[in-house]
Length: 266
Image (cartoon, rainbow, N blue to C red; front, side, top):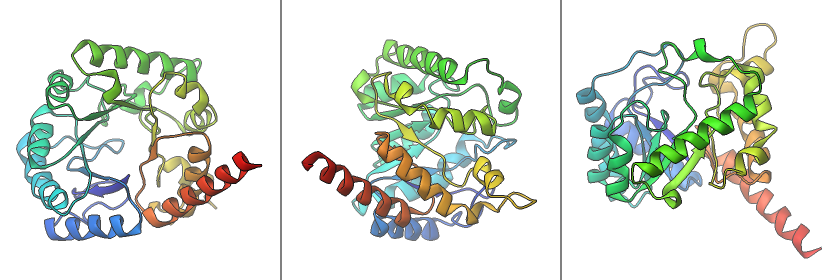
């Protein structure tokens, strides 16, 4: 899953693709590099980010989704709002990536159910301006699994078919660095929930801290570490990884697939 942030304030590439033409060009480049789908977002969810208006979010993403879908791309809309998701689906999106897991807008799960598109349900404990206040766990794996299971049940109760859903543990969302590492080391527990897993670790601050020699390494210099986590996630059976730099991760997945096939023949 290649990331296209049509925003001025995303943590890794804020403003770089805020122009429609540049965003579309970037998306097409990600496809050439091996992306299977493109995740278009018009609202930053970095820690501390302020929300944008629904109209502004739609203005940012709708033409980008339409152009990429017209070019044949499989497009995911990264939004917590039913109104934005509806506009994006009308423009050609076939996946809704909801970082709130249906909690920010109670109308979103029913919209997804009616549209019949795939639905990414992420573990979430609050909006960006306050989420890190809720990064408190006795057992992060058990609690994230339990809370994701409850969200899965809630969206299914709202009409979403379980087969439409993909789960995301929400690395960095109400999580400190040690929580992220523990969750990554226990993807088997998350997979036991019975749904495909999306892993979004690309360029996140816990990687910058790990790689630091004093100050955390800048986000754009974390792509090699992100690719290393792609290998780990692919080996652990993740459905997809959400990444900013596609080529290295796509190549890593090919290597894992080839080695897996070889091991099965042995």
